[in-house]
Length: 334
Image (cartoon, rainbow, N blue to C red; front, side, top):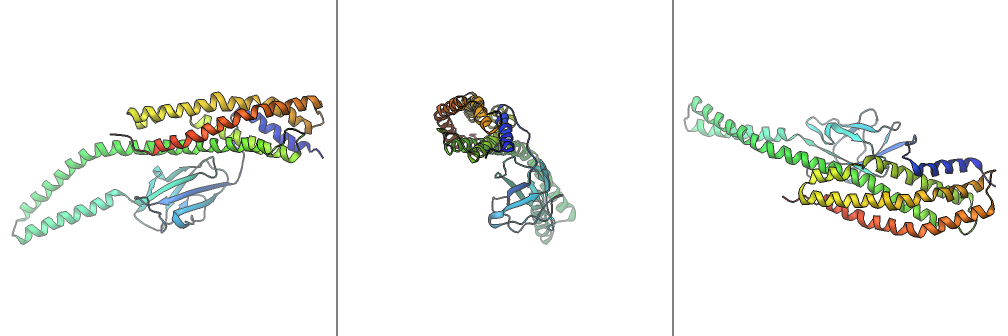
């Protein structure tokens, strides 16, 4: 039995190969991990996503899976019930909801560094005061010593701040860029493999079944979503990586990323675009306007001829992606 609505959906998926698609409405699940400043799981922290109750239930290792109302692109997470403990990352607690439902976002929590520093300063100044009082120093002498200590501290903080801020900003930029590459390029790599594997599940030497057509529809739709996000989110990423890493390390990661994107845009994706015509002809076999048997057979043969060239391109992509992520995890020299 041939079912026309299923083929309409397949036709829409095939059309997405040529353009970046809009995301469809869906139930949104946010996956994440709550960490302390030193990287340990924040298992005792209570978190709430504003507008998306209830509280987040943290699992072993600080992991969580939380259902969001609707399909927001950004949410805000807060620490509840623990005064002094705040969201340190992402800035302002604002989380960009990943397009890939399997992606894991990181939430860093803890006390602001100023709280610990303030306590240490108070202890040190109080110790100086007590030591001098016991030895008979006057209040004016004690105040002079305390003021000199504080003046020296201010000067030292000013010196440290300049380098620390530069280092922290650079590190935050590297983290954000690394997560973007992992999210969008990683999703594209997986969806490309899924698509090639889906073709392997379909026997193109004969007329395909409706079930096989639905397998192709889902794989093509997922691939198209992944390519659209990659093309939109990583268009300027090589230059951004060069600026964030700088020097020889920046040149290396920037060039490596350019080569991977060139492989996708100039080799892998064009091969898939070339399959649109044959796939549409195969799809039309499920409609009242069925093409001739010879046209369908020619279309199947065209797809079978193209498939052996797709797998090597995907394999190269799978081999290069881990090396890029390893380079992005290594700290830059200097």
